[in-house]
Amino acid sequence: MSKQYLGVFAFLSLCSSILAQEHANNIYVNDKGDVYVKADAPIYFFISPENQPSQKVLIPSNDKAANPMYFDGDGKHFLVYESKGEKVRFLIWADGLGPKSSLRVEKGLLFKHNNRVYVESKATFTVSAIDSKSGVKQSFIAIDNKPFAPFNSNIDIERTGEYTIKIYSTDNVGNVGDTATYKIVAAPDITFKIDNIYFETASSRITGNSTDNLKEMVEILKNHPELFVEIKAHADSRGSSDYNLELSQRRAQSVVNYLTSKGIQYYRLKAKGYGYTQPVNECVKGVKCPDSKHRENRRVEFRFYLPKK
Image (cartoon, rainbow, N blue to C red; front, side, top):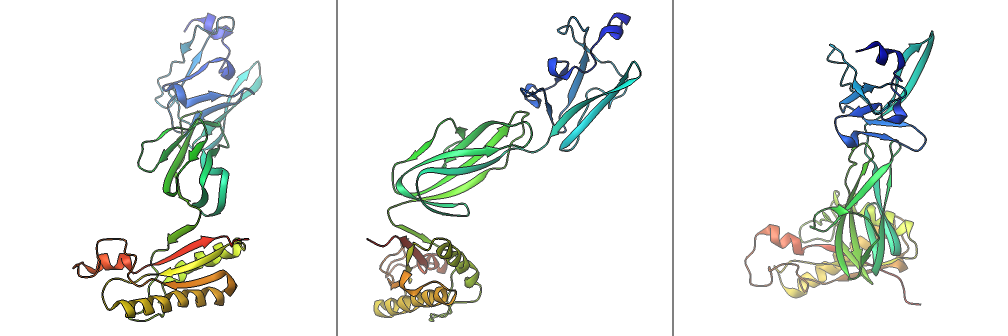
C-alpha cells in the first residue's frame, strides 16, 4: 500500500461507508451515526484517502482472523487505534437478536388470554414489533395456511370462525425474529374446547390431570369478571341416548362445581349436557369407530358470552 494512503486515510470512518460487508443487509448506520453489524456475519474493512472516500482499498492482512472480521455475540465492541499518541475508539454494536413481534387488536377485542384472542365478528389487527438494537426493518404475516407476506397495513377480519395468525419481523442487519402464533376466535358468542379434560369411566368425577387445564378457565374468568360462561359437555355415541344425556349433564355440573370452588361466582356459570347430539366427526350411532375418534366427541366446551342488558 502506498504512503499516500497510509498518510491520509481516515481509519474506520464508520459513518461514511469505510466499513463494508459481504451481505448488504448485515450492516446498518442509523441517523445518529451508530453502527450496527449482524453478529457472526463476515465484515470487511476498507481504508480510503481522506479527500477521496469513494476510493476504498481493502485492508490487507495475512491473518485470517483480520479481514473479514466477525463480531461474535450480541453487544458492544470497540475498535481502538493510536493517532499522534492518542487512542481513538470506535464503537460497533453487534446485533445478534431479531425483533420481538406481537399482534394488537385495533378494533373489536372482546378479551385476550395469552396468545388466544377473542374478537367480534368484525375486527382489525395490526402488527407491533420491537428491536433493541438496529431497529425493525419489516414485519411479515400469514393467516391460516397462506404463505407469509409483508405486513404493510391493518388486517380486517370479516367473518366468524377461528383463524391462526403467525407473525415475525426482521431487523436492519438481517436478523429474523421468532415467529409468534395467535389463535383468533371471531364470533358474537365464543365457544372453544379445552383439550385433555377427562372424567373417570362412566363417572362425572374429574381426573387429577384435567384440573391443570381448568386453571386456564379460572384465570380467564377472574381476569374478565364481566364474562359469563356456559359449560357444554358432550358424550360419544356409545350407550343409550338417555344415559349419555344424563352423564354429560353431570359432567358439565362437575366443571361448574370446580370453578366455584376456585372462587368463580355461581351465577356466571351454566351447566348443559348435550349427550351425543352434537358430534364433531362421523362417529354417530351405528357407525363403527376407533376409540380415538370417539374421544373427539367426548369433550367439554366453553361458550363465553356477555349477559343481555
